[in-house]
Length: 125
Image (cartoon, rainbow, N blue to C red; front, side, top):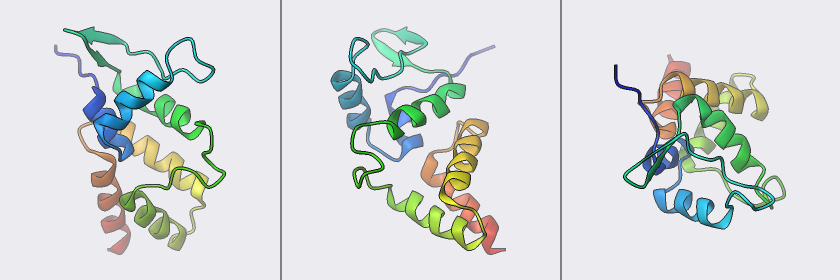
């Protein structure tokens, strides 16, 4: 059986950022920094890979970046629309974020923007 991993492209898509942002995070926050980017679970021909179940850990890492929560790091357009729809359905931002992380882990083949659009569509019905 083939085991699936997320590379920098998959991590970027799940978080709504470019692969370049993920590469930048890895170089700016190495293992010996005060806020190290989570180490990959596997490396194939020099390309890192993370188990899909570690996506929540990477989201927590990103949310802990300096400046986040103090006006830095605006959410992607898909995430902003998702947060508005979630609020209209009674979810606060923390609940909406936890739900999004859970769905992202449950459906690793979908990007975060795809999951946001899917959830918004479900709420419209």
